[in-house]
Amino acid sequence: MIAQDKLTHLPERFPYSCQWEITCRCNLHCVMCYTDCFNRPEAIRRELSTAEILRIMDEIAEAGTLELCLTGGEPLARPDFFQLYEHAIHRGFLVTVFSNGTLITETHADRFAALRPHRIEISLHGMIRETFERVTLGQGSYDRCLQAIGHLLNRQIPLVLKSTAMTLNQQEILDIKQYVESLGTVTYKLGEEMRPELDGGAGPFQYALSKQDLAELNQQDSDLQRDACRRDSLEPPPCRSGMHAFHIDAYGQLQLCSGNRRQSYDLRTGSFQTGFFEALPTFACEWKAPHEPDLIRPRMHHV
Image: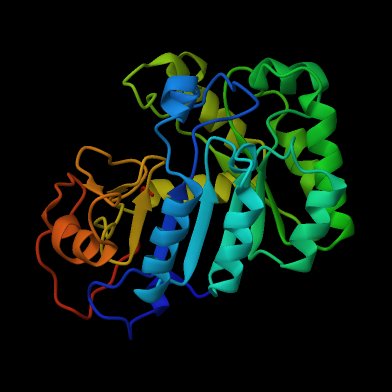
């Protein structure tokens, strides 16, 4: 993968990278999930159809987008997931899939192996079944997740395992990291921040760790401590969302990023070209910097 800050040959505004929340439906109800509030029949009925997604996907491909992240909800909960995924691969995207893993069977793993993704990222929130399923609220989800990891590893699919640190699993984070390291080629990511639910609810925050708890967790592992020190020592660079990266939600709304949905452009009724080049530049973002010289291209920091 090409680092975003190395793409200095790109125009100042170019739709290089898309994160697409293709559904909010999910077979689990993770306690800290910010999309689960829309995991309801009435909201699911409003999601983009297969034809609408394929049409928009073609538009962003024609605009030059290279990286495409398919996320949710749980992307594989859409019955048409592999139709969408395979179309994306054939259009030339570098496709990343965010998944909880529990719907990935051997047959699915074979399909990923036949048309390989850039990577698959799976959430692993506990090393003990009880902990894992207290987070997911899904009986049997622990075993299905580990089975999916095995299926993908057996087919040498590029894999990232990630956890959200919270009160329910803080005692197992280091065990999860150690397990991931034992797998050899798999990367581990630790997330620390909770998000409000899409309907404005604050439910996830009841599971958030205090700053002291996070500091104590990071101090127990040299990698985590190094990453924490790096984050604390650097002033977050100005936001570049909407310049080279953009977000599309399950209802076809084009937004600056998944963390800023205050303004949207409706891709159901308008074109991607108009949305990206005319609408997004007008959207407000409290992290945006004033105008900078063209040679300065800082990274995005909150997508």
